[in-house]
Every structure is written in C-alpha cells, then in structure tokens.
Amino acid sequence: MSMSSAQMLISMLLYMSVVIGIGIYFAKRANQSSENYYLGGRSLGPWVAAFSAEASDMSGWLLMGLPGLAYWSGLADAFWTAIGLAVGTYLNWLLVARRLRCYSHVNGSITLPDFFSSRFHEKKKVILSISSLFILIFFCVYAASCFVTCGKLFSTIFGADYRLMMLCGVLFVVLYTFLGGFLAESVSDFMQALVMIFALVVSLVAGTVAAGGLDQVMENIRTIPGFLEFFQTAAPALDEAGNQIVADGAPVFGAAVDYPLLNVFSMLAWGLGYFGMPQVLLRFMAIRRSDELTKSRRVATVWVLISLLAAVTIGLVGRAYAPTAFLNASDSENIFSYIASTLMHPLFAGLVMAGILAATISSSDSYLLIAASAFSKNLFQGVFHRKANDSQVMVVSRITLIVIALLGAVIALDENSVIFTIVSFAWAGFGATFGPLMLFSLFWKRTTRAGAIAGMLSGGIMVFVWNYLVKPLGGVFGIYELLPAFIVSSLFIVVVSLLTAEPPKEVQEDFEKAGTVEC
Image 1 (cartoon, helix red, strand yellow):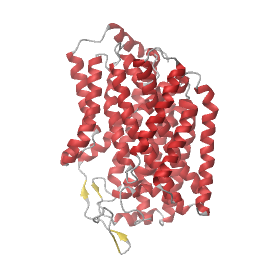
Image 2 (tube, helix red, strand yellow):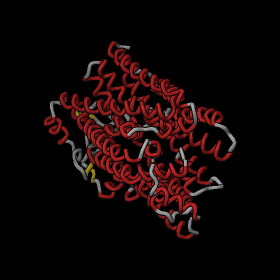
Image 3 (spheres, helix red, strand yellow):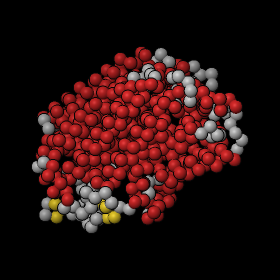
Image 4 (spheres, rainbow, N blue to C red):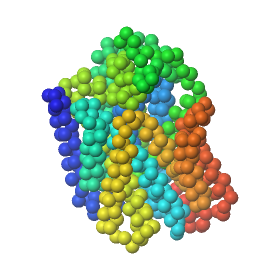
C-alpha cells in the first residue's frame, strides 16, 4: 500500500471510529425496548429528522451513481432525475409527514407494515404479511447497491480485490447496525449528511479548478454531441467488449440521441418513489412533534437541492477533467472518488472518501434495520408468535439482519454492477408498492382493506413485469417501471375500494381523529 493510500485509510478509519462510537453510546438506550430500537422512542428533533431522512435516502448512489450517469451520457438523464427527486422530497415532507406522524400516533404503529395493518384494523394480518415480504425483497436489493458502493470505493482507492473490500463493508455495516438501532442510525446520519454535502462541494470545486475553470469545462463538454442538452443525450461509441472507443487520446461519441418527452416524465417519476420509501417515512413517524416539521421540510429541501446539483455537476466536470479515465458505465461511477484521490492531499481526500462511506452506511443501516423489523416485529411477533416478548423479538431481529446482509452481499458479488441500475429497481419497487397506498390511506377515507391489498400486490408485481418483460421491448415501453406501476397500483386501490363495502365505523373514526389530534 502506498503512503498516500495509507493516509487516506487513516482518515477513513478515524471517521469509522466516530460512527462506531455513536453506536456504542446509544446501544443501552436502543436495547431498552423494540420501540426504542426501531423508532428511537419518537424523539427526533427537526434537524436530525431532516438530515437523517435525506442521508438514509440518498445513499452511495448520490456520490457515485448520479455523477457516473452524468459522466457517461451527459446532462439529460441525471438532470431530470434530480428534478424529480427534489420535487418529490418537498412534496413528501409537505403532504405526508404531519399526517403520517399523527396517524401513527393514533394507531400506535412503529413500523410501516404495522401502520398499514393498524390503519385498516386487521384481524387476519394479510396486509402486514404482504408489506413485510415486499420490504424484505426490495431491501435485499437496496442493501446490495450499498455493498457494491463499498466494494468499488475501496478497490479503487487501495487496488484491492473488489469482493474482499465489499465483504469488509458488509461486516462494518452489520456491526454498526447491531449496536445502536434507529436512534444511533439517525444521529450518525445527521453527521453523515454534513460529511456528504461537504465532500460533494469540495470535490466539485477541486475538479472545476483542475479542469481549467468553469469556462474551460463548458468549452470542452460542449464539443460532445448531446452532452449538455435537456432533450438529447450523448451516445458513447463502444467497441465489441462494450468499452468506449478512444481515438487520438479523446473519447469517441456518436451522434446525439433524441430524448423525448416520455423519457422526461419517466425520470421525473423518481419523485413518486418518496411516498413509499420506508427509510424516509419512518423519520416522519419518529419526529418529536409535528409542529417541528416545517423546519425539517426546509432543511431537507435545501440539503437535497445543493447535493443533487453538486452530484450532477461533478459528473459533467469529471468528463472535462478526465475524459478517458473510465470507459464503461460501471467504471464511470468512480469519477467522484477519482477526483478526490487525484486532486487532494491524501488525509483530506480520505475525509472526502468518508463522504461516500457516510452515504453508504447511512442507507445500508436503515435498509437492514427496516428489513429486520419487517420480519421480527411484523411477521415473527405479529403473525407467527404473537406472545413473543421484546427480548425474543430483538434476537430474531439481529438474526434477520445478518441473513439480509448476506443475501445483499451475494447480489453484490458482481463487480460490474451499475449502482444506479440496482437502486432504480428497488426505488421503483417501494414507490409502486407503498406509495399509492400511503397517499390513499392518509387522504381517502373510503380506502378499504381489499383495495389496499390489491394496490400493494398490483404495484409490486407490475415493477417486476414491466422491468423484465415489457421494458425490453423498447420504444414507448422503455420508460422507468415506477411510473406505470404507480398508476396501476392507484387504479386498483380506487376500483377495488369502490367495489367493496365501506370501511368499518371504527376505521373511519381513526381517520377523522388523525386529522385533528395534537401530536
């Protein structure tokens, strides 16, 4: 290992020590009860709620996936995705946060499946079981994206084997999540959100300066057909192995490809995913008081806008600074770490690299914790062993956490995986399975239990059907699977609810109470 790599490693180890320290500090409190472990005793302040929600949501794809997308094909895909995410963030905090906080207080739920089940006063826990299974499925995929990030980051920096580095990342995340639960996760996510935005801004400035300044960057990338267009996209010319062709020291691009309005709506649809994203929705349920949500919304929106703008711009600047450094879509996701490691002092670069690690940890611990709660709290205690006490639930939770981590690691074994692609599928899965149901559960009293079940099943299944059977047909069918699946789920909820009997009186009373209760 070179001296510079050793110095970067020292910085990252110091950072990881702080994160582990937070887990140890909150371990005793977290283990007092399952509510403390899974929801932090509903004690999050507005700043912690906002920062932890966004840090756990954005994950490593913000620092690797999104810059890589912009580096590889230009502005269009990355820009419209960022716009959809920014709008979705704001609307989720505006429309869902307060209502969900109060409704979960009314029915006493501490997990998302528990909320949906209690919302419809289930006796037979069908909604609870279905929602828990979908969480287990999609969070395995989500966790895999984080482990891919760890593997790519460490193998790029230290020249080590990808799989070994990925497994080291898995071990660290599992150890940390074991210790402190939701509260430790949320507090450390607050710190990690600061590290992430610092790393993005510093790397953007360093890359722009190294590339000759903003004017020089713009001059260089304007020569690439479609690279800076909103309704066109760049088309790297590829050889038989799938790598971009380089001629006379410059990457070769084909003619710009049209980016139709349908593609714009497809990318904007990323914003719909927020309404069904468990790691964000749990922060709404855990906030200390609903009157603090206005501050949280403003903080979260500003953080997201700055972070997304910096991430997309890093990809564009990276193409000007290092035009031939990465010759395929998978490798291009290393542009952020490449800029940091080549332009900064190793100790400082290590801190910036910790930004990627921060993004990865802040998401993967959320994914593992929520998936573990879905099985232990909702399936094990809620369905199979209703007399299970808190101690038994906690043991099962930790076993489940390890199993989910191992499954995610298996998915992440392929070092050619594209982080953005993995995340987009899991994002669509949660958005279509839970997004429509969340909105209708909070704002339409006529929603029935049968409609809820139909909506979840149709949305979740449509994500698989569209991604694997319809999308390969191309053309108009090539749109992001979240959009058609979200529409299908909404239609099923409305139609089935109208075709079935009105919800029982006590369910409607809870709905009215949630709109007026102080929480």
